[in-house]
Length: 290
DNA sequence: ATCCAGGTTGTCC
DNA sequence: GGACAACATGGA
Image 1 (tube, rainbow, N blue to C red):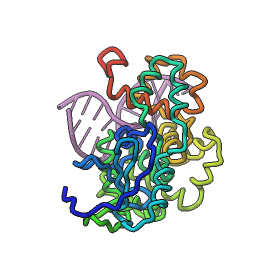
Image 2 (tube, rainbow, N blue to C red):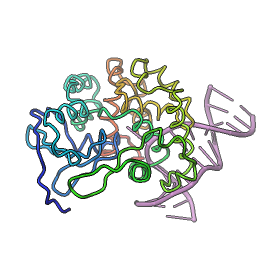
Image 3 (cartoon, rainbow, N blue to C red):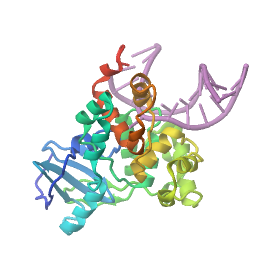
Image 4 (tube, protein in one colour):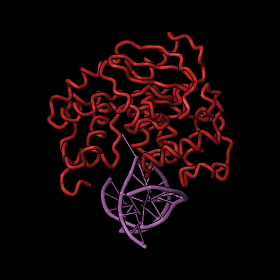
């Protein structure tokens, strides 16, 4: 990596328990890349950003807006990384069950990011019957083909996540370069229902989870899992419990009665601890580890 | 080559 | 209501 440009820096004091590696590489987002120098770089909020842990602090800067006011960037990142939520309290709740306790100790640096609702919905439509590595590639090609270029101080080309309005008028053939297969028609249906106003993602903030799920599931290709991921990662509805193959196995073998009652309001966080934990320790699921 | 991946749909009972 | 193959793509 050529790293000749000096990086304007801001410091967010007290990153608390936040781990960038756990948070940015746990399958909730797909646009952050770990650089050779230990910095994470990614696109969020139409900005090209870098972040890095340094002891108790978080260092960060913007490559697309080198002159951004530090306080403005700090404010954006505090929101994006969800620094106001009391994750220690959530880990305390996880102490009531031995496996959750272990998972929260292992993955307790995870925060649920506050990503943009449309990006979250769209990327989790792409996630279905797919693996994280390939999802990352699909998102990258979607942005390269249909996002807006964002000028960056490092000389590289970055792209915003394409707006629903940009995708809505396209044809399935036009999406071919993304190579998302049968998911193309799902993306288009989602983009059209958002663009037409039939579904208002921002309005879902005021709608209870169950009802919001039913609304999102009117989109072709959106079932309960994708809907819950979109609501958890895009609208920060912490009671969502998206059930993928990993979480399904974990719930079946470790929580036949379901999560403890007191966890349910923050099931999404516990689920994310568990997701990271069992992917790194498949043996806890017993048998062949599958 | 066959199986699988942060699932959903359509079909058949 | 539940079971089950099909769906595009690419890595293991």
